[in-house]
Image (cartoon, rainbow, N blue to C red; front, side, top):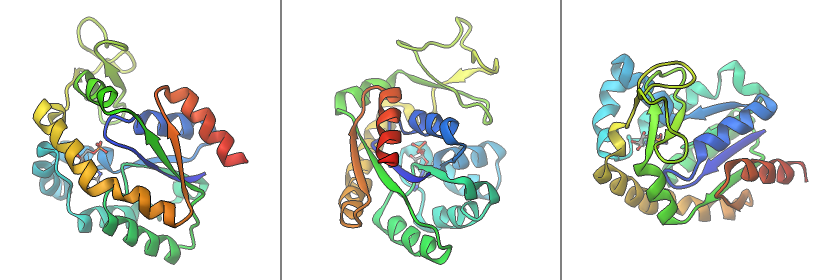
Length: 215
Ligand code: AMP
């Protein structure tokens, strides 16, 4: 499959993307994960992106497009991809349209995950993430806690609260989403690619997406 996942921070894009990728081998491309790995590594990209990310602001479009232009040409994308957290602005969506045309890639669908704001706020403030960049298992202190020692059940690394998951950064990320990313819903509706799913349960959402793709 070749799809884009749209949705507010905390809508469950990462979980849905992982499940879809396990289903047919399409690769999950998360710009957030790519940026976090760069910050951890301390390379040029990471140094440039860190301050924006910690505040919950968007990283500049030019930097993101450079990453995505290279990423989409890697061989694992041939089997299909699930874009998670990209595009995030109208200029990114326009640049992506041009890039996909240039690479002769056609999108199957743009999936919009609809989740009520109060559910999102609760999820984000209780979310914890495995600190190991190659694991990044997501936990929730209420519904899916890590071990009592605060370590990851999959790989044993410490489970942490991300810098951008403080209350202040979360509110900023939601505001940024409404101002910069929500307009993409109209953009992809016009392109005839948008499909919205009310999404409270990730597994049920994945089943609905699979059905919709095969219809
Ligand atoms: P995420 O894990 O997708 O919520 O991304 C974490 C942070 O990385 C965001 O709050 C932004 O600072 C940055 N980021 C990720 N993807 C993008 C993007 N497509 N455009 C701009 N900034 C991004």
